[in-house]
Image (cartoon, rainbow, N blue to C red; front, side, top):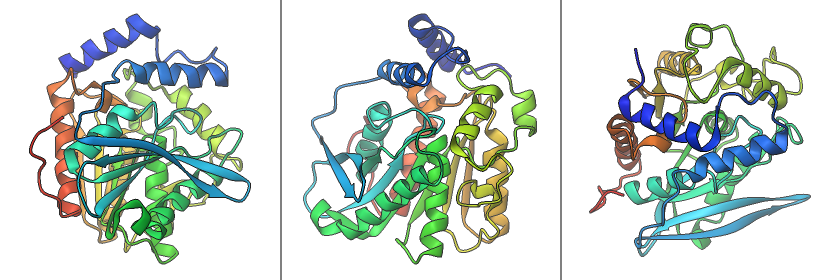
Length: 320
């Protein structure tokens, strides 16, 4: 099956600007990070007047966690979405995911906290996971100061951030909170099995390759790809019962497709509520393409609708 026509237009635009996005073998770590931010800048837009955006920090012994805050211009406490950006564990940033997170805030009516967790290989697991869970706890702990309704919190993330979001759901269950209304996992990395059918057969994705995922997972996992730590690789958790409702948004041309499908099966088998969407003609990272692809845009708004329902939010007066 070919790419959706809007996705193909998006791929062509990115390649004209930045070259072959999947060909990262010769790039240094710094070049990978710069390239990721340049890639994201292709879709950056001015914020609408209905959104307030600011930056803050979670201050911890020995380090700080930068957080970008997106708050709809609404009085009173709001539900919160703690968002973990993608970037193969080694790149990505709140700034690089600005279009996605601003869009989530505008189209759900929730306050979004975009977390810049520590990145591998300088800070491998468990540092990124620890930062993600700490940010989730911070949103509850400082709910009054932040204008958050502590009873309406969700976690979300894409790609590597989807791994961290799933781990946060497991940690919140096992450590007694925060109580989550939903975990939204967007084309997530959930295992280190590089021999699934989607890894071996789905070689057309323009921006993600099996080779690139091997690099990312080896950077993230200091004990190797055979680890049985379920917080590092949520697919391998010994127990998936008692987790918050899950929304998995996947892409049919993505090497990570089977990660998401298999995790949805595990969650469902353990008795959790699960919604699974597989975007037809979509590739890894397709939410950035929603201005060019009607299918990507429709999938994004279905995600927003699910988050609104989970967080008891009305539909906003206008889309953005």
